[in-house]
Image (cartoon, rainbow, N blue to C red):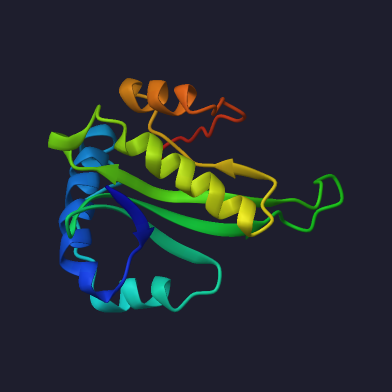
Length: 153
């Protein structure tokens, strides 16, 4: 298995993986998520960006997982330290390939991606009902730093 940067040849496989990710999102928060369609412009904007990439887990030309990473500077607010984060916008491994260490390889590659770009820490979000996801991230060194709360209007 190889962890590498995604390219235009990966788009169809990435669309399939995004569908799996979005099915999970709908399961956890149907009030906010639907299964969508990612057009080529979506992928091109990432591939052409200077502050984001998609890292893929590739087995013999088949993409079985990905991590969409972004480099983000903290807001310029007096009380915040001027830090940079590598943010995992989206991450998924094909359901049939989970529990084989692929997610850990993607996390490690995401951390390395951030280090190479001067990031101070790595951040992501996980649905509170996604117990397996929480366990996975905690095993990878993540800890809860803030809770997001909301209320329907």
